[in-house]
Image (tube, rainbow, N blue to C red; front, side):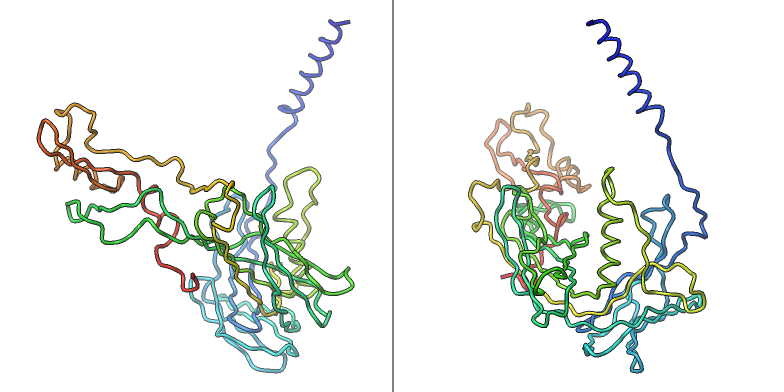
Length: 394
């Protein structure tokens, strides 16, 4: 009996090995270059502020990372039967308007003509004024720091929402550098590089709807969850939450985009769906154009969290846990191996190491200077942020 079980187990193992190694083949869809030269329109019309639209071209699967921007286009916003508002190109492929104030009784659309003289328009859509955010809240959980938003539309007409956010955090590098190598010598540092602010914008699509509720009230909609050991909570953390009220059509488009881009990866995730936007080529209605241009204002609210507000039991992560200090010369090395000053200057010259401090010891060779140093990644906080304090920081 034991032998039979062993035999069956061995056959099962061989079958499983064949299944894993013998049935998996690389699949590369046959897509011609002409088939993926789609115009991509990314952005929305900000009815109470500056509109930013990014134009690019879809790229082949094997060209990911090489975004083709659509530059030198003529882009403007137009009210139905009313005025036009031009957008100017700044960085290549990015177009911005002046600050606008459009009535929620207006119907507006985006109109653009590429450098190749192809004309595209989005569908006219009703301008929406987004209700204010009631509050942005936070609470500690077993998983980390949960941030949520509360809002309501008192008219009960707006049922669909999107949230984006920008995080900013204050932090210190591993070591405070008092010295710098400059003009062929080591001198007192003239610029502080140990205290910085990091910044990061959200990339995931956060949506919510009150369609099935008796009232259009958003209650504790989760925005982001920060792990307890994130370096963003080293000193002080801030999040600027941006809320947009959407039309049903824009919500549906973004929901499909969210599922296609964020929920693919396991057997039980939904299959990709075709995106149907509201932008069309005027001369060829069958041309595929990727993008949905809605029209709405943006409500904002900022939240600050100080490290002292968090549980004392939470680890104070810095992101610099593996950083170490070294010395040149090394005090415990034989004095005859100690480098002289020209060699020390040559050591710091390439910039691979940054002097942190200096101490002197009375040695058999007389008074000798020993320099503490570490890598730029551990000393220079500008590798992860900026030293300029944000204007909104307390």
